[in-house]
Length: 277
Ligand code: NAP
Image 1 (cartoon, rainbow, N blue to C red):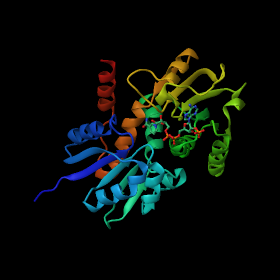
Image 2: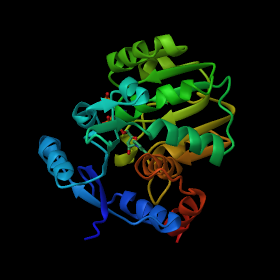
Image 3: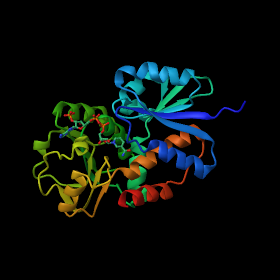
Image 4: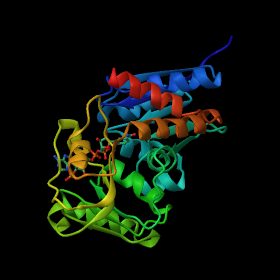
């Protein structure tokens, strides 16, 4: 009997996840036969739900808020980028049956910035707002683009300082609080806080964005987020949200699972046109 390869995204909440749609579009486009579903899994149920999924023959999982740290602990082995970020968004069954954990968020962000939006990060002064799971995942791939420096600013200052410390050996990275941003300027400001999800904004001084600077909110929605709107008010050359990153990180997961790289542009265009409708 032919069985179909099964994949899923686990998260809490998960109802509005676009991942099933994106992976079905990738499967259609590349002629791959697979099933991809979304499952609401609170943190306390992650271990049993993931074990049940893989025991029943599931091939791969995406994990989103609040499960990325738990997925990191669940994986039998980790890629270097997942190890560094201590967060896993992609679990994949290996030939020997063990589970590999990877983190495709940072690669997704960098591909969206550099390939889709033609932004050269070399020599950039980068500010990351937030020091949670997403912040952790993007620092390594951003440093690979040879920026001038990365500053991490967070509401809980110690988390920013600790996170910066973890990447000291890889580049010029420092951590601070939002109050320490006065009189400083950045070429790229990335919002990796979850404030946008409640239409809020971290407290940011005017003048923070350099001339021709770019703002990028990792969050996305049908309407411009509070941070995207802030970027427009600061005259950003571009003020973008994270829909492109979402599609690019999914493409990277699809490649890990299926060995085929889908074309992302038509999927981004489709999702963009749907939210504008
Ligand atoms: P997380 O681990 O829960 O971290 C949340 C971060 O936001 C923490 O640094 C927290 O600061 C900060 N924060 C929360 N509310 C705030 C507020 N009102 N003012 C200032 N800071 C606030 O979440 P995450 O997994 O890193 O996700 C962060 C965002 O990235 C979410 O919007 C998520 O949707 C987005 N994301 C997008 C993609 C994509 O593909 N586009 C991928 C991953 C994540 P404290 O440390 O002080 O609590």
